[in-house]
Image (cartoon, rainbow, N blue to C red; front, side):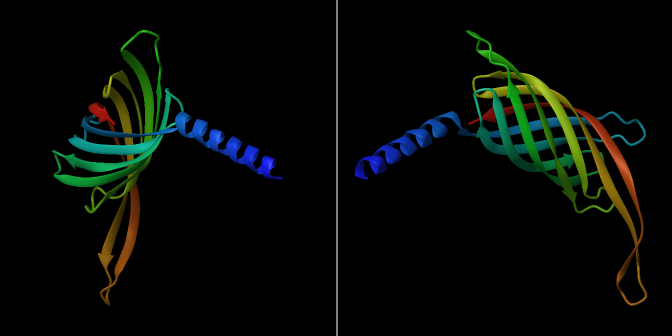
Length: 176
């Protein structure tokens, strides 16, 4: 019985050790400059983003992130919360590796005209050591509510509409 316990303890420790070596933590901090592709309502802004997660292999990263987004044209600050995935193409004997990635999540704002919404962005770029440079496309759909004050002071929702904000972005980030 003692031998069985020792063998099982040894196998579980080696299994956990192999698992911890295959999966490791990675964090990213980056800045993104974004401009709108819509001519009717131009927007442009800067985003400070951070995402933290795990590398399932040397090529695949999955994580959660957040940040601050500032719109130059409209002076609006919003907070994105997102899920991020990234796939790095590892080339033998090459210090630069190309990658593709995606972010999807929600954006929260306290402005009435730039209300909460969902967004999806796809990007590609190159990574050099701990630095990465990327370009991509983002589409945000905001849900705008029109409200009126009620007779007794409560707020009455009159209508809800959607607004699309497509845009292109360029970014740089540091991984640790």
